[in-house]
Structure formats: structure tokens, C-alpha cells
Amino acid sequence: MRSDIGTRLDLVRARVADAAVRVGRAPEDITLIAVSKSFSTAAVRAALEAGALDLGENRAQELKEKAVVLPPGPRWHFIGHLQTNKARHVVGLAHLIHSVDRFGLAEEVARRARVSGIVQDVLIEVNISREPQKHGVEPERAVSLAEEAAPLDGLRVAGLMAMAPFSDDPEHSRPYFAELRELGDRIQAVVPGATELSMGMTRDFEVAVEEGATLVRVGEAVFGPRDSRRATSPSG
Picture (cartoon, rainbow, N blue to C red):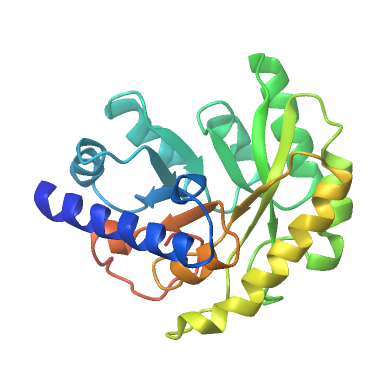
């Protein structure tokens, strides 16, 4: 397992670097998040031993359980839908919360962060595909949500996150990633410093890099196939 995960991790890093160079970007400007949702702690430990620095989880309970038993050091990213009453489990443990999609959640994250004496970095999740079954604020509301959340003490809006519609063709994701990049430019005009763009998964992360992603969420290309191949959440 250790050798296989290390080999796959190196391959994904190389693909990220190649995609960055193709469009004149520096590979070191893109963070690869190894999405460990549903994979064993042994698999995650193998990824850490192979040099993974950033890990992504979709569920608050799974994040807590893995963070307790794994060595300290990795930056944990919470990338799944976050219920307001679960924010207490994630704030302070996650280096970055990718899925703030409503003001009430932003308020709760900020409140929990103040209690802990920290500032929690978050991304505004955008339903860029406008699919009713997906979470995220409508693109038309993203700028106003960022403006509303940015002044909250204890919270820093660091950028945007989105997931393109499922397709076997990576090029199908390109217009959605381009739209998120343009939306990011608009948000930076009102929230300076909100420069992060979390987009791209196993099937389309190279296109995401070409379109400006600063964080890519890759699970199966690092850890191997899950039981369910079709992605219905931002899990890579």
C-alpha cells in the first residue's frame, strides 16, 4: 500500500506541475489536497509518509477520528457540507474550511473561533453548476455573502470553492472553472486577500490548474478507487 500510494502521489504532483507550466504558472503556487474521505488511517499514514502535507475530509466525525490517531503535522481541510451544529468539531482543527455557503454558518464558525482565540480561514462554497442537489451559494449571491462574512471577528474569507458537474470529459469542467476564476476576481475587489480557488478533482484537476486553481482536491488518483466511483461531493 505504502509504495502504491507514494507512486500515485508522485504522479499526481507531476501532472499538477505539468499543467501549471503549460499556462505559465509556478507549480509551487498550487496546493495538492489528498482527499482521505472513507480511506483507512493506514492509507492516510502511507500518504503522509510519502510526503503529503494537506489532507481533506468530508465529514466532521471522520476528521476528528483521524486527526486524533495520526501524527501531528498535516494541514487538514474540511471540504464537505458543514451543518451549523457540527462547526464546533471542525473550527480550529481544520486549517481551512472550504464549504461556508450561508451567513448563519459563517456566524457560527466565527463565534467558535473567537471562543478558541483563533481566526478560522474559510472559503465560500459556490454552486457553480447551479445543480439543485448540490450545496453552495448561487453564483449571483457569492459576492454579497463574502462581503457579509468578511467583517466577522474570528473568520477570514480566503477565497472560493466549487465543484464542476460530473462528466467523463475533463474539458466539460473548463467553463465552470473559468466562471469561478472570474467570480474570484470580483470578490477580491471587495475582499482583498480572498485569492484562493479550490476547484478540480481526480477527473479534472489538470483543467482546474490551467484555469487558475490554487487548491486541488484529489482522492482516488492518490489513494485508489473508492467503492462508489461517481462523485457527489467535493471529495476528489
